Length: 271
Image (tube, rainbow, N blue to C red; front, side, top):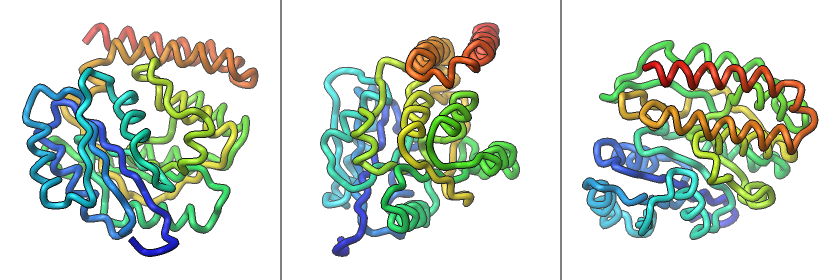
């Protein structure tokens, strides 16, 4: 790896991911930024996920590691387990069914290198279907919403992210020192851990938005957000209560947000 270049640990938790995990890994292998290492964390997959990863690990033993957990951790716990076994300057997150475009890490690393105080950089996304076909325009509204936010740091940004989490974890990279300073993910908040993490990080450290489509998010019938929608709703409500207790400036928005989450939970239960 080039001397002096920021190193990136890519953390990829996987469970029953045999269909798409190789595509996710290949998108990391295609990154133009050279200083990365991929940590795949197999969260007790019941299928051939580990074999899919092993086939690539054998070809790239210096670039890919596989951690097999002996009990289920869910995604946040698997991520924390993988992070604990890495030491790069930056941490980037990829899900088993998503993909990155080749310049993703390079563009984020450039942002970090230009601003030593910066704690996180996230990109815009595009949506792909189960077969990897781009759904034109499907993410336009989401991306436009990010463009309207005054990114930076402090209570103003954390309140904005409390009202609506506009950061996709799969599109983000975080400076390790900042990640460790706030304690990483709260693994007890299944479904709400990303949201609570970003509110906590933005309250203390600068966050930047890179308005380029560099991440592909796959939508399919097996998305965790769909299959475990009720459990995730409970986790979001617990995350809300934690944030309301921890940040006085968020309290005025809590009732409206709670109402929104309850409506979403009722809709999920009706499906």
